[in-house]
Image 1: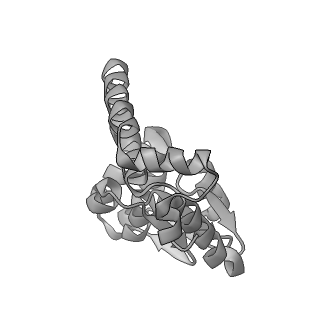
Image 2: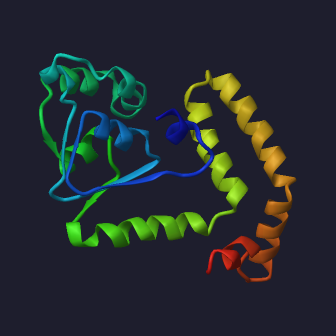
Length: 173
């Protein structure tokens, strides 16, 4: 869970079935989550006499204390549509469109600079955990660092000359 959340590579989760207990923790740890319309979710641990301790670390930032409390205590099963409302997943698609929906996310990410993608993921996690003044200082440092990078130079040159950046060609774009 920690590697999924803190690792440099984006993690996309596709849910096509039930995500209970630890499975729902994997969904919460993912950066992007898409579910088939028939998917079901539950923090079912209390029905087994245990608690969702490890997954709480990745669930609480997504669902907040209010929703998490109720769902952890009741072990209620909920639908993919409800999971969107709770902030657990990004969208729901028909089961036969799940693979193409995930591929669309992969393709969109592949158009970004590899370093920029990694740094964007790090930025979201870091800024969300910092006090405002520290968040602005961190953001200022990162933008200066990345604007001075070779990847940014390539991305801006590609934009100006109306061609794909080198990483997009490498990705099959």
